[in-house]
Length: 165
Image (tube, rainbow, N blue to C red; front, top):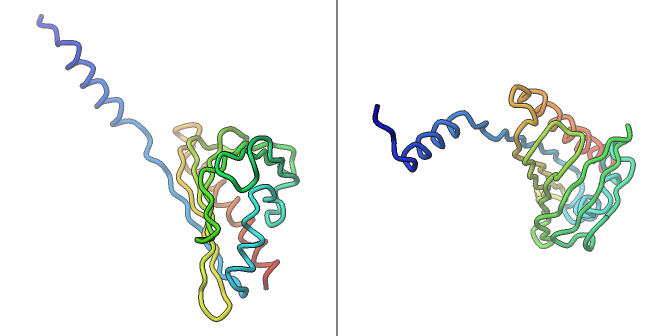
């Protein structure tokens, strides 16, 4: 029996493994608000206080770095006591957006990266867009992971609607 050269075997294995790798899931939610983008940005822009506009968050602590600076790390304590660790990966007040990733926590996701942005929608209105891509913690739990993130976004965006209507 002929043996495959090791580099060829490695290439074949990497192709077969990547064929079974999970595709990232993507969630995007938005809400239109009857307030100017500048007013809404003031509320959502504080990486160190997600609880100011999300009802599931009991407390936000900046545990490393400087708030609203790339590299800042926060720990969210949820109303049920669960914790989520996040790192700020981008912050652009001019474009009214920031991005962050979850590094550890109770949510059923891995490799989660998200962006929150506020856009002017004319006539003193704005739109908040919250989007992310991620993998489920367990490969068979795509629906649970996606539904959880959708629920998180709905909770925060609905609260913004309540605050600004």
